[in-house]
Image 1 (cartoon, rainbow, N blue to C red):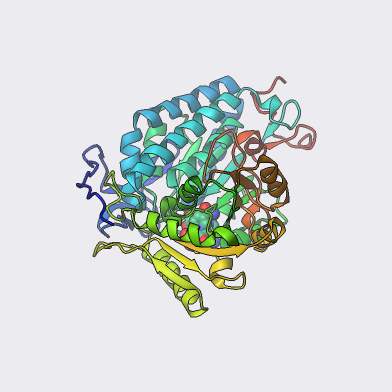
Image 2: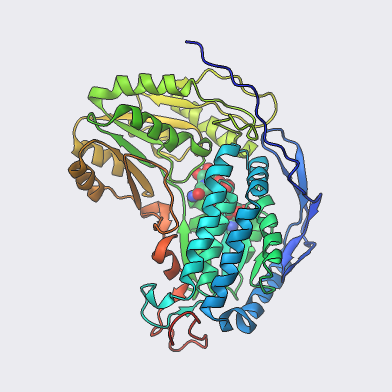
Length: 494
Ligand code: NAD
């Protein structure tokens, strides 16, 4: 079959005004870090973008002290309505600078511009708008009247949705009256640093949000700092476990959003055309580097061959390449390390006897790339059915009855997401009820909304982000905090 060829449609980078060096954003200004500065590169070309400062323990201490001071002197004293105004202002500035942020995100992360432009950045703005509306209504957050803010929040985020994860962390924390020290991932610091400029534009009081860059050691120093009251982490289960251990026995409140191995269940009565698009969106969105990806496809045996054939046809039409090209469907893998993990697990899949099929596409010579890949003949004991590959790799398993589908879907140490494809509403409800997953999508996948809580069971972590539930991670009920010296957060009626 011949397909139409697309002429290149590259998005211009002229809108970017990047600095060659970025410092740490502490107390409203940029300052150099004491650690060894590092490069952030484009994963599509391996070209250097900027040099970024690294925060050591002393820098972390300075940032936490700035956040503490801002909490006590400014932010906890401000009315909820006024905090909301800052959040609205930030949301509007994100919208105004959305094209620039989308280009920077695709450059630094490797994701296709159509995703950063149409999904990531609009959702960032939506998150700030949503929590802006909550800032003066905290009495209705579900913790009774006059809930209390916690104080200083230490937030560590991953590289797969850099600015979106920042917004999931910062927007509810500020709405609830806390101040923040946030560390972006070392391979994707760029949009967090542009966001720091947005905070300056918004004239957010100094120290309310501090952004420090660095790798794991910086993150560890931040979450272990004795003067933080709340830790919020998104990333690998291994690091999440370490943080849970180190914060155990302290007064720090902790939320963890970790990995996943989502089951996307296709029943034989499903609308197959829509299901194929949903499967593609479920595992190939953001190159599959999504914690809630539908990385295990469970197909009812009677439609297995049809689904797999049509999936292969569809994958053959996906365009892999330059993330800044508006036609690109699959961009670059974020780092050489991540690509190495994907290759290793894919090799294990073949060695364990599953059948591998990859779309026949020409991959660029430079940069980090992995073709869209499907494994069939997979059994539940295979590593590729159990481990998070975090890449554009789908493992296909079969089932005969709804009970078998549910048993296989739940047969994982994770429990973040799942999908159900069927034309029967009753079956959706019956199956969703039995799935041990924080989010269950029906006849769709990977849909996000700031009003909707998101989070996991089991090794996918605990706590919820988004919606009213996301606020409770940053608040304490009035009565349990009665002995606290901290004031009731403004934005409640008392
Ligand atoms: P990671 O957990 O190592 O990194 C995530 C963030 O934590 C980064 O900002 C990192 O600098 C920081 N960090 C690392 N060590 C830390 C420590 N000891 N204390 C505090 N912070 C620390 O994740 P990774 O190595 O980038 O990716 C590994 C795997 O994690 C992936 O293959 C994937 O399975 C999973 N992952 C999940 C998500 C998610 O959204 N749940 C995101 C990224 C990666």
